[in-house]
Length: 324
Image 1 (spheres, rainbow, N blue to C red):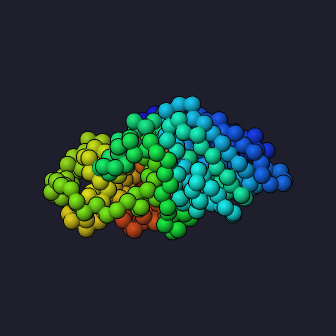
Image 2: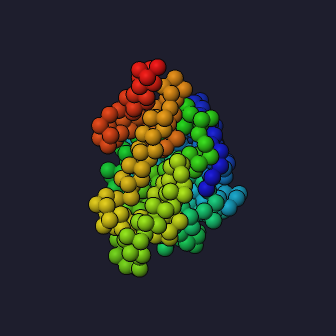
Image 3: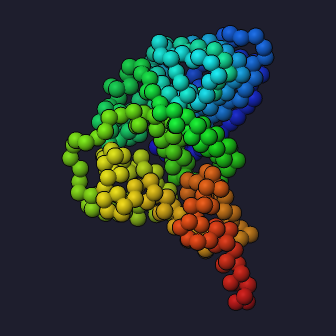
């Protein structure tokens, strides 16, 4: 899932800007309401994978015929009026699957915002590893809508906005490994609706919790300092998220997401402790380890270590000065 990261953003000045609402695709657009259409459009590219995030202030009609074998998974982030795609009525945080080579039509009756992933159908096996139905490419050959929990909408919209903003500011500073982590984080953010709509996984065989956790720890040790996303672990060990969560909770009393967060916080702590304040910033180190919201990151850091990251970075400088 690797690749270098690129981010581009622009302001919309007319409905024509929405012709490229999804990176790599051309969409026919007709304005439905009077006024000057304005908005914003951002694209994040990581290898062949892309995320598009757009917003606009007026109703539009969109039509698209795919000319390639890419799958599009879109999420409606906000809407002031009715939105329909195919024959589906959409609510904020609902997810729409648009199969390759399928003609797509949508109607936005008012101001709206959306996010859309575009990737190869062959990648679903790794993206949804451990989820038997979703990891099967055949599942994605039919259009579908996944209805969201209303609580997901605000969280998703805020987090995606933060990710796009932060990556745009620091795209040149990210390594290929960090870019891969953010690719997985973006996918995870948009597909949260899909996972929460799946039935509970109470069947199937799993490795023992302790053996699975030990295997994960060996995997993390081999990964070194690079951040590892939970979806990467599911892909590597062919286990569902629920199965991985059960194993970690049985062994540590915490889930794998919390465990990985602690792991990344410890990596940041070690980096800051060995860095010079004038040559390293907390923001850059945090972003390399997958933290986009600095305020929340500082809270996590303080809760775990009893000091703020700026203090860790500054402590070494003061000690060196005293020793001199």
